[in-house]
Image (cartoon, rainbow, N blue to C red; front, side):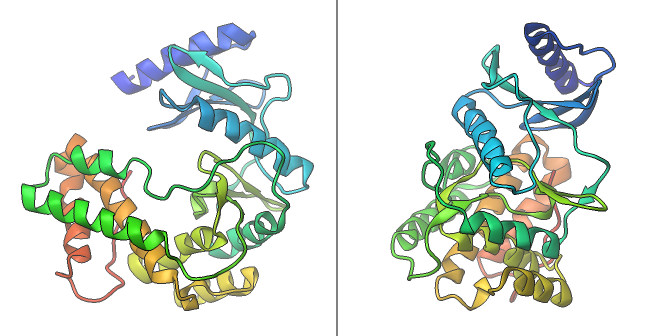
Length: 295
């Protein structure tokens, strides 16, 4: 095992012992900022990074609420109502989904439409903060020079101001917060939502902008796929007067995410991170820019 997997497995063993589950034969599904492990008997353990207890509790509450509302979503184990605290890491346990593929644009649109129409639940969700951790990521981006870092700080300040004066749009609602295809699991009969770490109250357009940026910035969503997404949802966020602000915030977020990875592994990620930054600074022509995924 790599050191990251070993450390995560150690937390998993402790968590399982606390609730009487077996960690024998556990398989890593994904090890990143959050770690997912497949256990026996159709159970998945999610180990969140330290300091995310509030988000983990919100995830459980949102998943249970969606289930009660009839929205297909990954389900936590019923007899473990709160996250475990394992050496400061929140750990939650979930029912494993049936075999599935990641969602496409048209798969996520109907689920978003259903969420956005739901009444606000009676537990605290908090308001969307689209700038969370961006200042931290800019400060920690070790591959930047002083000029690049200052440009990003200025861009962040500019967008924080623009966010406060968005034009009228769809009514504020519950939003998923991280609405991309990887957070939808599609089986032959049902599409399930997952990962509610960023669920909050906010403009529904924020969820729609994720796919629009995939189309207009990354170039990973085709014309036909984007048309199907808009048809399935019933609106095209790109024609809204506030779209450019949300698009610019999302582009800044994914650029800072890439810069964080570049600081940790320059060989793998510096070129993509700095290409994204150059695009934002107007050095690579019009969108789409053909950005590639960073993981």
